[in-house]
Length: 398
Picture 1 (tube, rainbow, N blue to C red):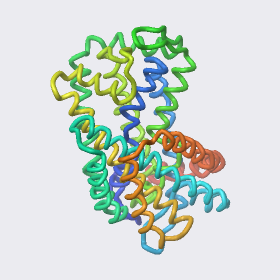
Picture 2: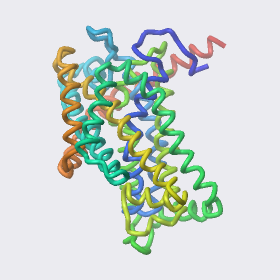
Picture 3: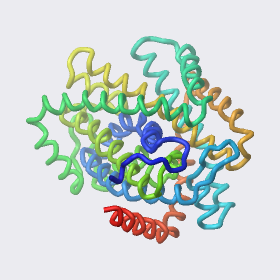
Picture 4: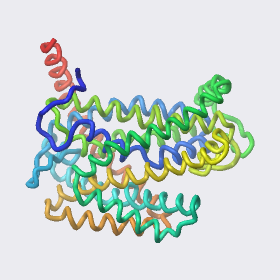
């Protein structure tokens, strides 16, 4: 009953909110990031990645509960929430909310825009030989058609796109894991052993200690599911729900899909096919693993489709995060100019080199998490009270 539909106030349905949040979290990091974590930290990194996902479920739940509790409705009728509103209305620290909003508005152009557009352009060029200028123009058109319609149109698209992209990717990975089921016990044993003892050098793998496995597993996990970053609560705050906890439960599901299903599937495919120690890294390693597991063109199709849909959906979701942040700072009058600037940045990302953008984006993301985590810590009693209230209401209904 906790997931039943409700006619409570909000802008989009609860499922549309979680679909849009998943559109942002399930990105290139689920493919390239997981592969990189394993090539640097060893098989044990996959264990710590999953652990970070389990812990992230609680963090994401708390973020969303607070986002619903302290959300506002702007002059366009759209519900707005997230860490900036939590800091302003919950901690009575609007200056800290403004700092978070500024960091979000800037970070969105990096990790949520240019990096994703570049991944799409590079993938299309490698697979089909299409010039990045052409693919960049196509990205701008497709993205513009969606984001210029605001959160309702973004949600209308993501509620269909996200299930398709996740299920198709998991289906491809599932086929490989079933056909290599005899190797799974040994892989699981290796993952557990490497997580606590490290892993010696083998093939193209240079070897890694426990701290490397822990560091890169947790880092890639948090980078993927964004728990604690303060991003996803911005879209969850738009959901029509009768209680903050009800939407918070969708946040737990969101992290489960992103980390426990999609990220873990990538890691297991890379390991069971034996390609993890061949010297490749990132998306190239994932592509090679899927090609090995699904002979012919199918493996390449799964990875290419995954990169294209994951990156495009992230472009859509993060556009709303950036829009929410800039609206908090400067008001709703700047929303349209921000959306147009978003499209310009997407084209530049598709056609340019992004080494510096990656570094800056990672730094801004880390800085975003600081004020958000402060709010979660200081307002944890509010989350606890909300959870007790929800439990009492549900008990009374029975």
